[in-house]
Image 1 (tube, rainbow, N blue to C red):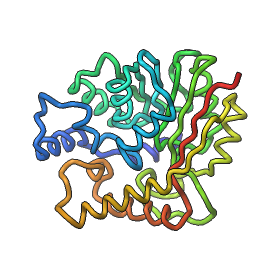
Image 2: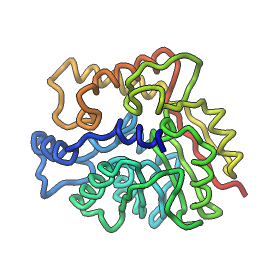
Image 3: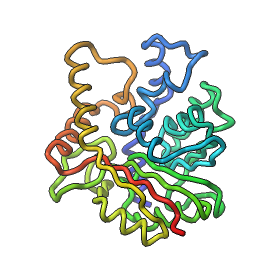
Image 4: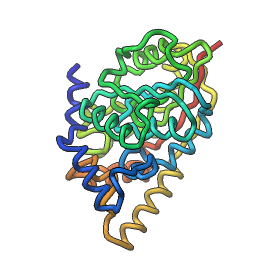
Length: 276
């Protein structure tokens, strides 16, 4: 409980919806005619944003009508993408009540309330019946959860016998101290970055078969290089993840890039299914 409270404090903004709406107006968007794509620069809080989500979907294989669970849904960007682009029905859960409120408000603004619904809760105590979902995914969530066995047990419980599970997390590549703050944690007390082998062992212990693993370090470094090029060429865009990360956003990103560049960590995908 203490860890979850620390995680919630780290992500708390205080006036996030207002800040996002103001930034959308500053970016020239009509608040009465928003699309999911308009929101992508600010609501996909993971390395690579929408580009990473699309690449993940190619591995994950969503299909129309699929019932999906978004574990740690944040502002609901990925949930809206799967609903809008792939015709899925998505339920999201997140520790942050503020994030959940914003996620649902943004879904309403883009006409997706009937296909995307987020609620406050813990990934370690999912409030869903067994077999509720055809698939589940999480983007940059496992780094905040120490007990990954319990996490994967909960996900397995709510999936159908043929369910799929996709993960896009920052994972450890080598031993060494990480630099803080980073986007997912203010300090080591709420940061539990593990290597892909540890994920595999925990997944297999809880009834999953790992089908694919993909290290996305090169992709991340390319994304960061593009960010630096844009930053050198123009003033910062009004709409971006700096709104979500707060006043020390630049330091969080700098520390994360440094640890990825030095080979300590990297974003990594795992595609799994319930073992037969």
